[in-house]
Length: 467
Image 1 (cartoon, rainbow, N blue to C red):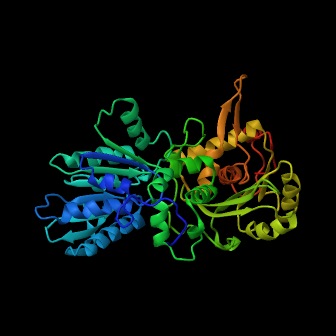
Image 2: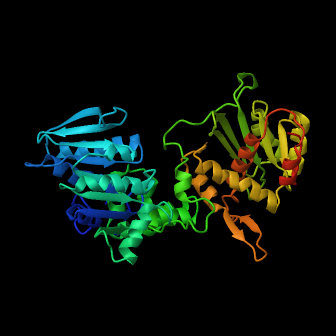
Image 3: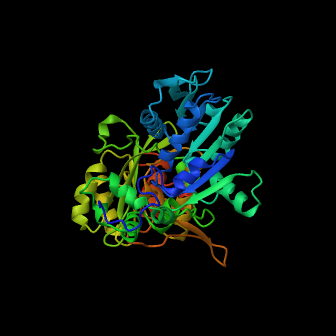
């Protein structure tokens, strides 16, 4: 037998695992799937979506919203695969306009019944005025899940099902609010609730199916269920990320300084090309700003580079280094600094030598030295949140970055003082957060050698340099 899985599905030759079959056979009007990542639920949801649209007497179109355009295309590809498998006549109509203003589009798969599946990205307005079934895939990631539900739900007035499928994105996300209504408030919306963690999937034969699909030389072939579980966990950014992504435990937004929804609202689409590979040239006239958080052994050294376009700061490069000597790190980082208008340095501990050397080499007007203390950390942290709330910041879609931003917590001491802290792990000490905070501070100061203003000097008692 291929692979080392110990747990076989009840019917090894069946198309679907028990949790997939239970979800497919559930015909209730409102359904919600709370799930771990990559356990085949979007794929299996495409099957009844095709079945409802292609069967004789089909009454409704199906409207699918996914996280982004790529996921919308993948869902439609799954639908086309099921149509081919069952010899159903389906025609890929490509991209079509789905609103009168002509600025919202969807991918359309038409069937001989005259009905169609429309697969689109996460704009809730695309759901407005449409009758028929709804599939809201990765619901918690759809930008504004509450608005999506509010617009999609009325489309069921004349019939159809609403299926919500998602992993968690924080305790304050509307997806988790729906689940808490089900569990704690006697399910007022009468939603049929399904929950499948990675552990649940493994106990129902998921690894057996996965190993049958993977190439013979895939490293997962040599794992049993316990080893695969540990393999997945070890690759996650941190414990919170693993519990949220795979074990259906939402991240605690009451502890973290930045909520998941807030972070997600500023992320580039997952596959968008946002990064510049070479240092910016000084002569281009572009406005780049950077923050450098210094590490040596346990912590990371992180250079976060932002470009200011209009009033929005776009992340253009994030360079992370670990366990490298100062000269070796300088070889990587120093070429970036001439083309950056201003760089704020962590001027604490190891950073003192770095900052002094950088000011001598590049000039005080380009290098600002920030001595971290409790008050300065507070002054640096709040603008990160402010830029996110105002949608004036773009950051990469990346689990390690998200975990670092989530790692910072705000605590109020008995004396009423605010402290920003983060647990130190083998992956750092919220180093990316502080590099980003320093970069945002660099962008808040005017370029060129300008003397300190008194108000700034009072606010940033730990800052050394000129403005």
